[in-house]
Length: 173
Image (cartoon, one colour):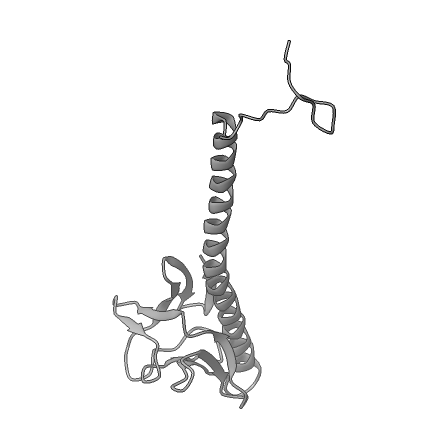
């Protein structure tokens, strides 16, 4: 039977208990581990969301450029990086407004059918043109080569848009 002074709740005071028990220590470490894992996962999702958003915007504008070309005279798409803010923009030749698709933390690369990689920058732009009769992609400007993949990266996250030159179709992977 325990003896000693009672506390205000009617229980026995534990005057000499000044440390942590092993169970309390394990619980605290488990809580810290769970919070740390959640933080790491959240940061990874933030990086992935930028890449995913950019790829879906770019794919949408590729489709819009193709539809514009098939229905009007010209709907060429130009992807470039602005020299002042380093963000990525798309313009469609039938419109004058540039559309922002990604921020400066991204890297966008065009991979050609010959395996050459062209990093999009303020000096290297990507111009996608479509054949009006078939909807197929035309050669890249000044070459006899097609762009068959657009890679969008941020740190370790990467999403690719694969272009099929013969049909003008594309898909995100």
